Image 1 (spheres, rainbow, N blue to C red):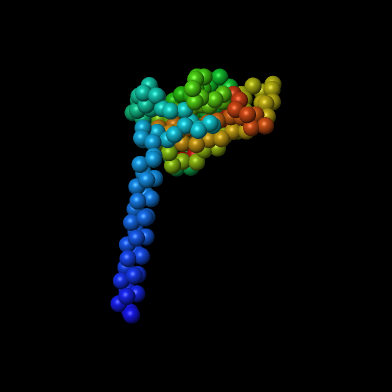
Image 2 (cartoon, rainbow, N blue to C red):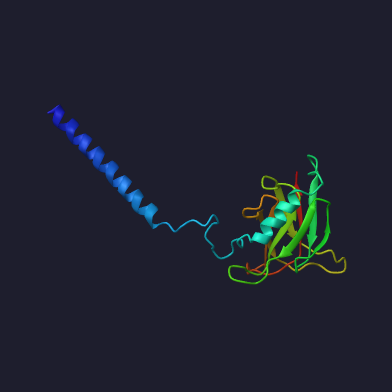
Length: 172
């Protein structure tokens, strides 16, 4: 009797393994082909263009050294993406031009050193001392496939994508 149960247990285990492998094979076959960049979903980062990749590589070869430990890189960026004020390690900033998969208020700030494992802090702001910046929300993240850039998304207080000026700090 014990031999019968051993055989039955072996058959059940093999059947479960076969179903698991078959199910996984179906899931793998159903996945779309990978392009090296994540699938686009509303509110995510725009894809990285060849020109952006080249600019990032050029910036990494700049002569300035990364800030020493405890120092920060910072920038003040207008709602149009213009770099108004900045520390020496900030190379450029821009607002992504309108197009498929691009929403208002999406920016990139490029630095001359790898910031992919640094801390980023940003706030809606302006450098105009006579005006209070508009209310809103801001999010920051490492830039997709670009280790020396930061992605910034600004929104209205209601959560709608909207172009807003901002201040950003990258800690070392």
